[in-house]
Image 1: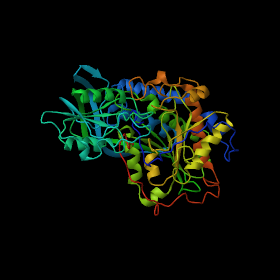
Image 2 (image 1 turned 180 degrees about the vertical axis):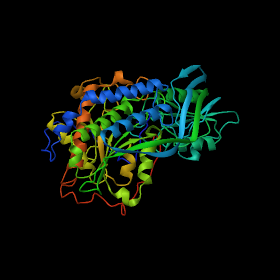
Image 3 (image 1 turned 120 degrees about the horizontal axis):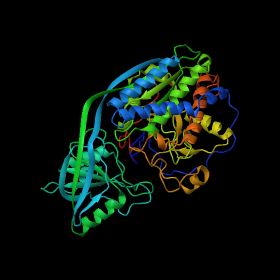
Image 4 (image 1 turned 120 degrees about the vertical axis):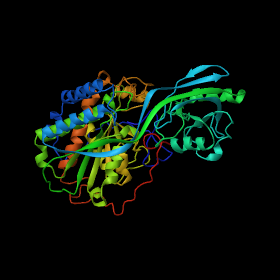
Length: 517
């Protein structure tokens, strides 16, 4: 999933977000009996796949990132398993701008006092070492406002003229994408950029993300508190710093998606349910929770869907997709949806997305498809998908919380085209609240996955309790959408979800892996 505190927004959320109580009441009686599938999808089977992915990472430099050998080995394992279960599997190859660090970025404040500051590189940052005065933009918001309001670096006029010597621009997160901030700094004559977190609630820690495309200067992140101290030093008489990055970018690296279909026609072949999980990790680690858990859960569902005979009863096709290059900006799923003809795209009935299902400090999260909790609904049908999940967990007497339907994972490209979507999530870099700790256990005040995007995201840190619960919920939803005779709207499976001839693609915003506001 996306970088630390970097959000993706395929849709713009309203400012007035509300907190919803968890769903705990019993849900309505399901149309489809999915019990045989949910019983067949066992945690042990999911863990067998996870152990294979961990072994693959161990043998390939500690990661499974797109464009590197660990991804190819992961893809081979998934494809072999699917073919053995009876699926037709194909690779959808595409090129992408590959990015990796040769060594970690560093940020050292030199004056008025020397100290090393915690930092991280932005994806597609240039490589180099720059030492010089730190110059904040004219419009940094310190102290931060209660809600996001910074426009720092979004316009050329935000920057003071760069000194004649090498210099470092200090830019605040907010409003526009990171790449625009970095490009504006370069155009203003700066030699390196520090982007610090905005300082509003949940926007205080070290921030990193993606620039969207290569920028030829070092770009690193900083926490809000460290930036405040740095700005204070600048205003008190000046400060200098050294920014160092060591990166490699290959604009034409090749990778692929894996697409698996069951070789049998259904009653409604023009209503395809696409079930997706991203197969790649970040280069920094093995990516076993992010997103080995989604891959392993989806793979086991596909395997057991065939073994239990549910594939013989499908009302509509269920297509399993394993996306490449998600960590670099949802590139694989975006390529898949963009490459379809209008007619083929209109036949996608729904997208289910499973990205991180075993977070150590978990919350059971369901995407807010109807917009009732966060103010923005997904395309028509997304609310019904949300209800499939909440009804299931309600009947199981398991609490759930809503999570923002903001496009931060591979469902984002689908909702851009008006395709209904939904999914489950156990949490990444959000902080667990006291209320959530009282319901789900775990530790309030800590992020939901402390190992997120680190070398420690390995199989020893996966929470098997939530992994089993969410995988069962995912299996229930796959079977329900695939076997339902009524369809999402309850008015007959012949009803089309939408026609893309009239759907408009939402404007794409990129900051973080796909967007940041």
